[in-house]
Image (tube, rainbow, N blue to C red; front, top):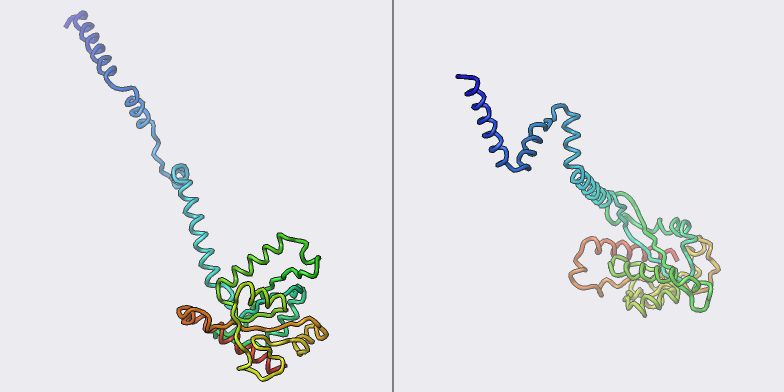
Length: 254
């Protein structure tokens, strides 16, 4: 083959290659170039960097979800199990003497749930006294107390209440909470229908309120007023029975 023929052949092959190239989309050529230049991770560090780059958000979301589930399970399994609770609904802020009140009440409580521990929950709800402008100064705090009390009552888990006249009227009158007649459990002259008067008792004396003049009472929520389905719940039955036993012990102590 002559040099001229060789030259013509090379020119024809070059023109053919150019025609083929022009028929391929630019994006396809770029993908081919990217694919050729792609580096395949081999070491653990390279694989981790590659994984984190592509799945960082998914991984963080999964970890956050697992943490929430663990927190919920932990709170349920390790929460304190109370044998009974007493809701203190008064115009006087009993929370200020809560430690001594707790100390004097604990001996009257029994291990109702059988976990080997005796745990009493004291919940305080300070009501504004209409005759005392000082207790009505913070409207926002009053509203918070009201909402807290209503939310707790809606659960139906509270049976024992320590109240003054204002607290009794709020619970029995405004919120229509039914209290049980206590005369069936004690013939003490301190029993006033559905109230047991605490004034003059050893309990008030021991917490430093022996000369307290304003009426204070213990009341027991009437479990028979609950709907039939609620009355079959074992945890509520236990709370009611333990609360009743505690009230009987307090009345017997005088």
